[in-house]
Length: 212
Ligand SMILES: N[C@@H](CCC(=O)N[C@@H](CS)C(=O)NCC(=O)O)C(=O)O
Image 1 (cartoon, protein in one colour):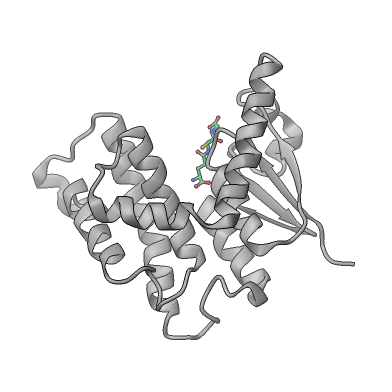
Image 2 (image 1 turned 45 degrees about the vertical axis):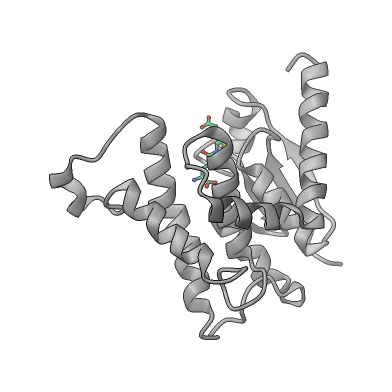
């Protein structure tokens, strides 16, 4: 029997990205929906992720946390879905590059922007992302090259980077540059993305109806 997949999530979280990735694989999965500040911080879940944050994924005996790692893990676990270049392939270079760039510099730059923190110019050298203008310029160049970040087909890197752009533009932490919008709209039209959004939106509505 195939190892069971369980997504620990909340529909109003980065868990939406992991859900989209699961939908792209087409594999059956279960969900454990956790509440902020209660079940997310309970010992049972801290045993899964000591950070008490979502998402996390269990696959049989394996546990993976960090949204980018979950996406990369699932792409490799189900190679038949062709959501990543094969290990060792030269296209792993842009694949890793943009996944890590987004989980590191992009995430830090937009979080700091949301908090109103601007890196003093004399400290940019020691900040992994330099400044947010440099980060956005690099991202703009990356998504302008072709329809996809890696070769000429969709990968987990597009899913993760596209989600960061989509959520960033929605929350106002990333400016709406035309190339960002075109790239995101193309990805958001994917059937798995639409399905994941509908499922999570339904969960949000259910939570609101239940007063949560
Ligand atoms: N670096 C983590 C961040 C996860 C994260 O911060 N999740 C938020 C929701 S989007 C969370 O669970 N917050 C609950 C808390 O910190 O109490 C990732 O990329 O998955």
